[in-house]
Image (cartoon, rainbow, N blue to C red; front, side, top):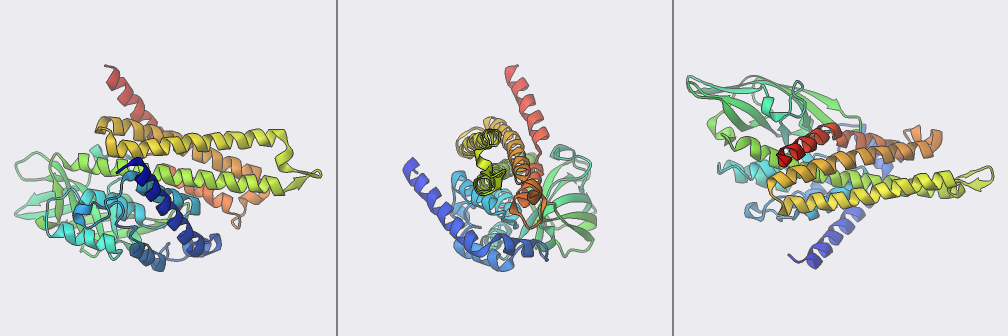
Length: 382
């Protein structure tokens, strides 16, 4: 694909997504949606599927559109601008990228078809409270005994687990007389032994904690097994973080624009706020952070497609760390520059602050990625 054609496709996605969201996802509509169950609009989800958005991250080998990361990033950026919360990140991005790597048919094609059509929502149940973002140290087990596989453990922060049809569960596979390895299992939320606790997140989205008590797993539910399981999961998480970076940039640009408009129209001491030099300097700082974040967003998207995995890890960690911090700082500045109004629930700017705060925590916060980047730099220097 040439740079020109890629740019044109990005523009088409941005334009169509912005028109859709401007028409269907006003701020007032959003406030109503997030305060009711299930925490997103099922009608809009169906329309997203009809527009082909669920198929964009999916490989063409499985009936998807095989979208370049730059195209997925362009769509995610519009999500960020509109504060659009929905199961897309967990189901259409993370779960899709993991399931594509499975060799087990016909389950692989069946579940990918369901995700692409919007009928199946698959929530990745990867993390556990005691290990934060370190997947190497998970405690959930899938133990083999007497020809049965039984899963036990607790997962936390499963994205939109409240509406999931299935869970993608990362577990330590403990076979009799063999060393333990990792497995990735597709488990229906209706299986016996699963207990879920649902939470509303700070930004109005939904997450779930999941407890597995002697949940029997059939062998045909194991999509991945062995030493390649964890690297495949981590690749999907890199993809997710590149998408999150784009959402954060979209939110940054939106908060900058609404703050600039506010300063141009609000008066104090008989003058527009935009005429005060100190506030002009702060707006310039916000603008520069937006520009730097946009550059890093593009670099993260490029790395996903063309860099080797070591470079991907470094670039994605650097981008997530810097963009998450810049987005939070911009949102805090925006709230402060709006004054007391910025703290009101009726004002969008406070919702952007909550959104960027939440996005910054998903799949590794800024501190975690800073440590990852530092450790990789040290290793590379030796």
